[in-house]
Image 1: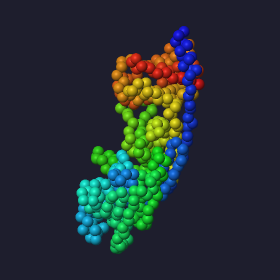
Image 2: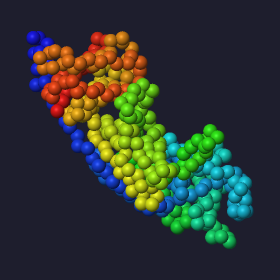
Image 3: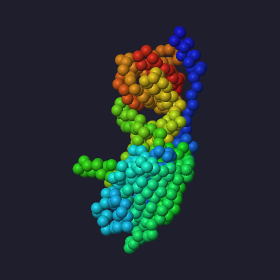
Image 4: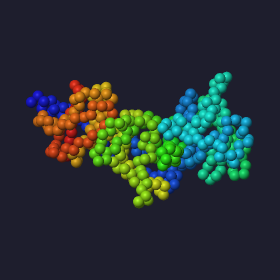
Length: 416
């Protein structure tokens, strides 16, 4: 009787909030002409012309510097001797070193991977500037080139460049972009080809996902990693993602953890089928996305049409409340979704740092206090998503109790 009263008291005090599933269709346009930024909180979609910029300069700190390049442009280190500037010859391209942006964070640019101490330059003890010592060449899809050297960094970037039209280099041009420009953005962008500054991203806090093209490591037929231009999704800094393969009820994710690598979602959520000559997405692969605000979204891709249209679609929902991730103790978080459930299937989600007790159980109680279901859980650390099939239970309201050792938490469970 005491147990029943405790359960009923819990129900009276329990409130829940349920999120709506959101279907999204967006387009990178034919030939992936657009880069698309998406905000999961506001559903805001912002597009920029993909090839409108060549160079991106990190501007978030006077002590941090990084120079990224557009993945649609090939980038080479042509010389580490500034005296070679006037002698750069595109006929020597085969002798240049090709460089790539990093794809796990936003602060590892292709220009940063040059041969100088800071990739493109060296620190000057006399004036505390970083002075350029490496000459880079950018090669465009139309066969033209631009040579570039970042001559100075001190609260901003001063760089020199010239363009090659197929027969000769243009006159040298020098530009300075201060970090104080576009204070809400992560990068300041510039088009060497057009000789102009470019806005190519939303404010830093206005997006979570960007749909674009970038280079990543792909294993070839011989098992070697090669750089390959892919179309996929990178995440904003501060976002973490866990991947949950939910196919065939195989939801044991003991080796899966959240990652802050910006390429965690990446490009392999779709594959090209040689049978249908079209792309297929995996509807059983779910991405759990934690934002800096603490919100948790569950996202599943539903279609991808490839280069012909650039169209893709996905569905997502805010599962922060539906998961009701509770801190059972300092080592364990636990949640359940969907709740309510219409097919009597639920998923248990628990993120465990040190689940070592031999008594780890989820039990379901009727409002009478009778235990109607119980299952044990793994006792090793990891991120788990375990599906429960509750067809044997009648529709109604139940209490779900998660227990680990001497600690426990309870949730109201609704089976429709």
